[in-house]
Image (cartoon, rainbow, N blue to C red):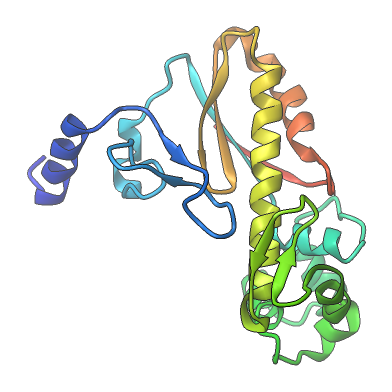
Length: 227
């Protein structure tokens, strides 16, 4: 509390609701924002995250491994790899040509720029076929029938981000329904991450919860789990 930033944050917490009030219409792509006076779970400084504690015994975080790349693979009608998807991309598309982080940066620079050319990525993926399927008359319509106005420059990013967001939110609803008759519950969502508030007695459910979360409408996505 000797830091002004911390004092300002503490003051803000004393003036707002201590619950997350999401706005599902806050962005074009369907990614969540929070309403005014909501707890700022999406924007709070990482240094202050420890002020958020579970009402039960554990916070368990579930998020998809390489969510946007896995979404793109599904849109390309390609199978989902069991291993880390960016490592798979490095080994199978770029043939070990760089580190995981270098390949990840190279891939997204190609994916989201319609004028970018990358011989390895162009050979492995048919980006034009995805656009032909989901982009029409200056709008994209994702697999969940969400339609967004988009020029060529934004079409791919809107398509993948909206699809990815819809997948995460559908999986969160699925987890919430599964936990309805239990003491554990969904605590909140941070972009592509769903955080569960688990009791010690229900920690054995984690494998079932991960299985529910990983089985999406677009295929089985790899899941990262953190306690």
